[in-house]
Image (tube, rainbow, N blue to C red; front, side):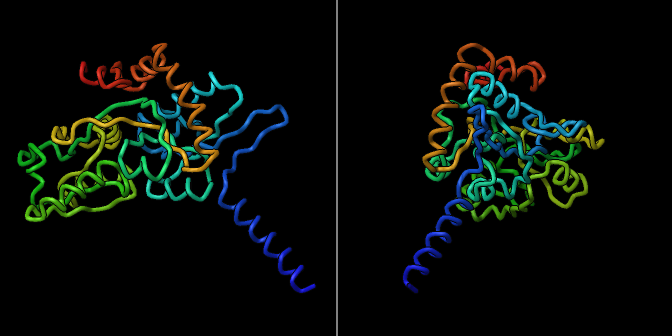
Length: 276
């Protein structure tokens, strides 16, 4: 009897654990599966929350365009601070991330990334407009540099610091909020920050700050992908959504969305980025 009770309790407890760690996607009576999409919501024009409280930005628009091609899915966007977005995905708080996620080998091994990239770009060093001492990556020697925890730019800088310890670059980790690290740059609490130039200039304009920036050419360009948990469901969603992304790429919809959100510039392919 005691053994039977123990087995029942164990099975219930195991079931709770499986449910807690699994996807929260839900299928409606009409057969539509609602997927929860994690996005930072504070990195315009890639992703942000508009005045009405609605998620917007290029990342969000791409997922909505995917939804137009896949009526079996609906997408609910969940603005989540950058420093907790991967943990939330792993905890099953949402089913995919759409937040300008760059390809990295370690990410490709830990998660499922869309095999079709939907954006391309480089990493920029951002600093006060009146500075004349930062013209390249090497000029960060001995300086404090603000970065967002876990971003691709941060991982690249960490690698660079390990390879060049003599340069004594001090990495200042932040939650990824562009407004905060631009204020730190302006106040001199840090010498520079790593960011998308487009995002930095938009934020600086809204804050009334004057900044400048240079692209880190040594790191080349990187592709952005939708990111899914490395689970059976994650792979299922990735594979279905990949097909839709391919359609959007082939029919020019990604190019049109890029021009809409990036001030007439097309960054939807590596070739388009080079042309710009």
